[in-house]
Each structure stands twice: as structure tokens, then as C-alpha cells.
Amino acid sequence: MLLKLKAAQKIAAVAARHARDKDFKPLAIAVLDGRGSLKAFLAEDGTSLKRGEIALGKAHGAVALGVGSRSICKMALERPHFVAAANNAIGALIPVPGGVLIRDAKGTIVGAVGISGDTSDNDEAAAIAGIEAAGLKADPGA
Image (tube, rainbow, N blue to C red; front, side, top):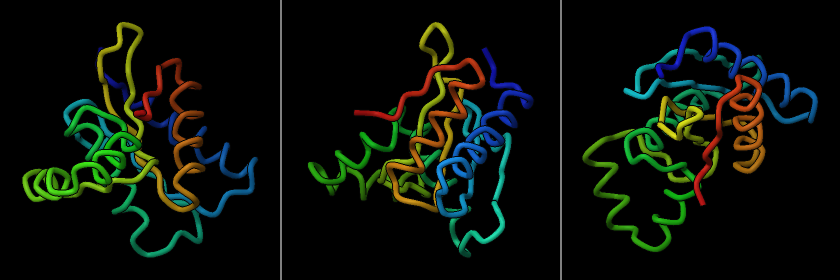
């Protein structure tokens, strides 16, 4: 299954709505397909200058390594040299929660969402809300 534009847009919209409902700080939301190509991007009014790049880095790292950024964060603590090398090899890797893989019903990775703007846990929660609203499975990592 491919991640369709309509699903990517719904993920971003619902993630933003979740953030407003919970009174999160303004978010930047990036939705990538399984190839790592940008499908949807949303930056709420008031996001700081580099939030978009951070959101992209969270999503890109998840797609590139095939694990949610919560797992990449754990890797960075346990194997910092690996994560540094991976960042040099693939670039744009942000090893903190908020990068959530998107899986289809069969468990196949079809994309990732990266969110930045509030705490990493809140960023991740907004991503999960968006993914689930699109009828897909969220995989934030362990």
C-alpha cells in the first residue's frame, strides 16, 4: 500500500487538531511516504524558525532506519557512535521522540510523521492521533 495524499493530509490535520485540543505549543508536522518523500507539511502559526526542519529530521530518521524515533533516541544513548555515523550517512536524523512510523494493516512501513514544537512526548502523541485517524497503525518505537 502506498501512502495517499489524502491520508497524509488527514494525518497532518488531525495531528494539528489534537495539539489545539490539548493546548500544545504550535507544531510543525511533516508526513513522508515510505520512500522518504514529503507528502504533506503543516506549520502552525507561531512555530519557531527551525521546527519544520526538526519535524522533517524526526520523520526522515524513522523512515531511513525503519524504527520510530523513540527507538533512535534509545540507540543514541546506548550507541552514540552508531547514531552519529548514521546521521553522517543519511543526514537529517533527529534522535528524539516525535518521529512515528506509519504502518498499513499488514505491518508494512508506508511512511512516517515527524512533529516538533512541544515536548517530544506531546509531539509523538499528536503524530499517533493523526495516524490512527487515517486508519493506519502508528509505530513510535520502543
